[in-house]
Length: 390
Ligand SMILES: [Zn+2]
Image 1 (cartoon, rainbow, N blue to C red):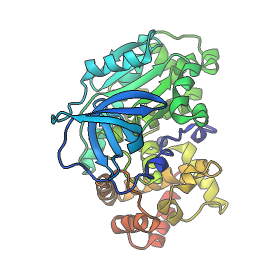
Image 2 (cartoon, rainbow, N blue to C red):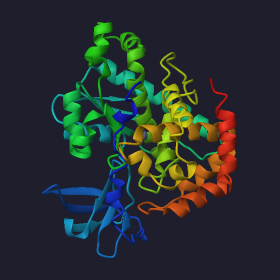
Image 3 (cartoon, rainbow, N blue to C red):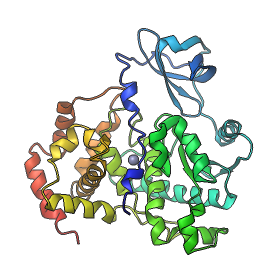
């Protein structure tokens, strides 16, 4: 489990860029827009719906495949509108779009809610979609029971699975830059896709188990101890995608990093024991817990207020691993012992507008409103209850 958090991508870091757009407003009528824009030095036509627009003509556009594009006015060549409302792509259309983008060598596997485009084995693509379908189903049931208005995704979700690490990294680099090169998979708030590579091809796993073929072999291989953090990363990224597409969170809204990451970590204990259900939700995530406890006992852990008010601890490479551990611990505590208040807080956050950053005072006031005015009282309860975890 060592170093697992350092594998996390920086998918939220680019949010800082979009927050440069100021005073954006939603258009009064929804229409399908065809925007000819300059993207990475090339002209490209995007079809979608304007979500927000600034007075200079810059837009946040959501395409028919669920991608979000921030286009400044000087990057837009022309715009035409046809007064229809935007229909998201269905599975066949999304598959066709992704296949033409990825080029020769890629194939597609469609499941109930996912379109998996891959150039590894079909069995591995099926294994992934089965994992994600089970996770998604369990996620929706879990939050509905907690009183959150969570629903199935309105459009199919895109998953890219590369056969090997290098081809995955080539794809990821375009979006994440060289900094993304340690990740084994990531969710992008902009493309709305998960990208990953075939874990069964990893040498260190194959040394221990040479089988690599049937669904059963894949499960056996990824059930090994060495594979647990790898599968956890896939589950973590898939949870982000589900959360943003099932109504629990809103993409590019001001989602506190501790909260988004805590949620993903709450679900990341993988469950490969069953083909049908998912029992990994809310188990103690020991890699996170052990680190948090160590930091706490040595007096290294910071006050809750710091975690809540700003994303800096999670985004700053020196403190990322520790801040993730704290985010898991607080999320676990709140969901377990304050589920209704936490669900109400989540519902409020899901209504936040896109591309608007809250200041630290607003973040703290929001949290206090739902989880308790006096943070010291909450911290005392946290210590009392969490210290009972073995
Ligand atoms: Zn994450």
